[in-house]
Length: 261
Image (tube, rainbow, N blue to C red; front, top):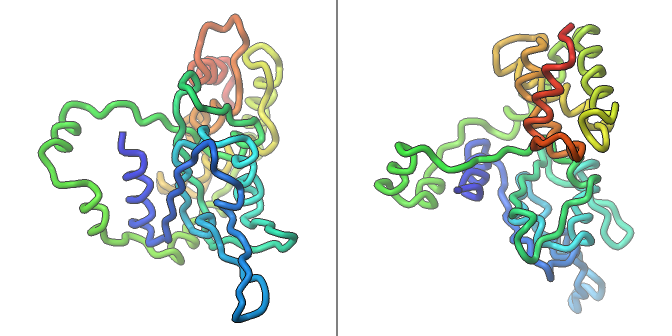
């Protein structure tokens, strides 16, 4: 579906350093973070950073790696740093992880633990392209070559400025009450087996602020929350057994049931 090409194109458009790791069953944590190798000339160990030391990391088929290897991303995604052999090293800024995964019913896959899922801001399903887009793929040039010739639309510094502007978007008290009501509804046991964490609530507010900034506003509206809520929280929860809906459909049903501020 072009997920790798999309991730690479985003990195090129923002002028960011891109790194791709193919997750497999035999991938080790050190394959991500790096390892120290003895250097005879220096008479000591020299650290060789792994592919995680990039601004955009694509974890391709992340659920094919063992839980031990998946856990190597936890500190990186939360703290923007990695600890290797007792020493903590900062990751480049900005740092962002994009992951793809295979269906859980395929052989050789491991379910992502809740702690890992909770660190991803969103889960987005691409689906099949429409007929016109697919025809353009068939008739056009090689997409890898096209990505290599993409011009930067932003610099890393400009991207960081935009990220700082997102944090300055105002979220009024009634809006925060609305987000808390949604989080509380997810914990009621009516909709999901396990409710949202505080980290998820923070992610919803941040995503809603970004949506407001993209809409040209300096304040968050309930529409912004509703626009980002399903993609931001559905991957973090499991619907109750008798719901008869998928996570996205269950989240939308909960959104309709919680009154607006």
